[in-house]
Length: 331
Image (tube, rainbow, N blue to C red; front, side, top):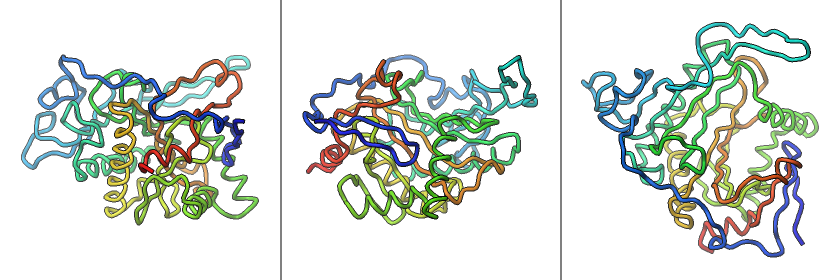
């Protein structure tokens, strides 16, 4: 019989198949493929993007020319515009505002066909340090209340361009999904006077059933209430609401565990498409970070969300996170 498992943070239920769980070879997925053509994110095509906002490049090279390792540019087709005011207003029972925000593209590498697992450790460190730099810059704008960093890799994951990149979006309000997670975390903190994410780390390290990788500062594990097969969370052991405050040693070890985690997944599922999202605390006074703990949620595209999931909010995971962790660790 399958199991129902309840997420202790947001209260969401998932159905986990424990009776006839899938094996890796049972999954049919759309692999990431590369097509010939001109890519605006590739080395030498800098003129095809909006001007650089920030860049890591070789000394002596000019902006918007070759010589870069990581580039940040405005999204050519932004969902939100940085100019203007929010101007909240009503239309009868409906709430409206201007589409205020920032929408940037962080190009992680000059190499078109390289994913994170193909990069050198220092190359991963470079774009993670740029995550911090962009967050520390955007937080200065008091109009913004939330910063979202997300990565769509592969067309099945929603990537419109093949070249590896992260999207950075600054929002004037806290998104609903984030607000629900924060409410759950605060409720737990008010009841137990502890961070729920810190408690999750302690329990995962004690049980040792779902851990994928571990180092001095970070834990990579398949969450007990996984919504998707081979879902993985990467979480700092030290309590913090914001990744942007990381020191150099923390960035270095995050780069290692992120690269190795993705490599483990792609060893089982070559050319896999996936999404990952940085979950962080709101900014500019919208919440106290005492009860929130930043983390990365990595979601492979191995199944599709369909009518049952949309209708109920329940997710169906055809493999237990315990079995997924064993496959990832070749046990």
